[in-house]
Length: 350
Image (cartoon, rainbow, N blue to C red; front, side, top):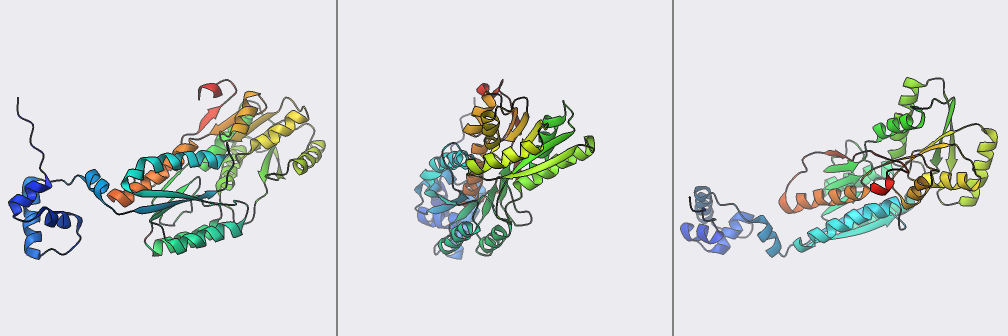
């Protein structure tokens, strides 16, 4: 049996190059004053011995600090962005030993001013890297251009702004998820009319639901071009107004049975259907929020198309940490989460 080869250390390199360990360290990390003669000796010995620095040990010993900011919408417990925060927090715990400080900065996803204020603050602080939920397209494009100018890497979660030189993206394939939603809604029970429900948002919002709608309409044009499609806006937090809006909608369309939302708030419509005892509806929604899951278990929501939201936050932060600490780019630019279909019969095992 061959003896295990002794691992080459920085001490070995220093001894053969006839320099101090400190000189070898400065050469390896390209910092501090080193004569060209000493640098050449160290590099020659490194090549001869096949020395590979222990990057983890170096990072643990380093006093350099990195600050990463996750810029995401405000959230309450059990909401979409709270699940995202769980993944961000998990990554923060894992990389804390490498002197990485991860801060979450929240903004109101229904307020351009709130987002603009948050990005202005970040451009003053200039963190080492930024994880972004790009809720507003043009404002995000302006912000990330400033990050690019300052050499600050950034990654997207949930949606992305194409052609903006981002490090990585983690999220659901949006067009395909809309196409899948249409198939779940009418693929097994043809419909003469369907309705989709939208949330009122400011102009310039991210393209998440817009791209999902494109996928939905592509499916409908392909398989059910004669089907009538109605749309209705709802408010994100005003239950009383939503009830009035929905009363008028179902009074006007009493026979409509096939309903879909392209955002994470299917529970708004589901709660209304329960309250008005409107049975025999097929309702498709997105994302594994606690409120959606409760309605799915009761059978009011028929299908939920969900994604690994926590993984998005975790992997997004991880890609930024790997870039800062190890100078590693992620294997892929666009990293799509799986589209998982939940029903009342499998949700307890997910």
